[in-house]
Length: 204
Image (cartoon, rainbow, N blue to C red; front, side, top):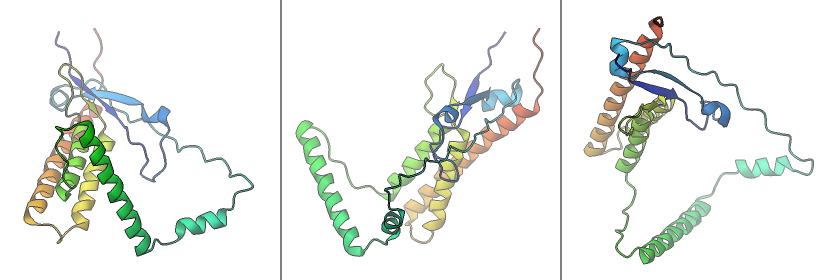
């Protein structure tokens, strides 16, 4: 009897779509279904995504707190001078870190500046890993389909907000990344839907 190949669907996002912090006990829940190739041919288990309750409300602040002062401080707009000073301090700290790393590892190559292509690659890799890429041989791919969708949507927002501001290489790279990720997302979600529609087979 052939063994079925499957993947595990789990939601590892730290925050909900409303921006609330997820409960660790619920974020680790998972449900299993067949891999895209196997699910198209035969699927025995119905996939059900775990329901998550909103996190408990934060405890009330102490009586000594002055909310008006703090809220006004948080809502105060940052001036250009403050932003420039912080940026300069960040650059100085970053350069100091590079020097310490170079002294500790003389043969290490210096890291270049972060580019828009690095941003695309970072979100792209996050989506690929969430959809099971990089799984060790012999192990079931663990699929975080909701986390993958969030990463794909982030690239979509990036494409919309940078429209007209990208060079040809950046635009092509972003478009290709979105196309590939969306195709892979469709394959997995179609497999999940097909698995959910098939009734469980009886055990002999």
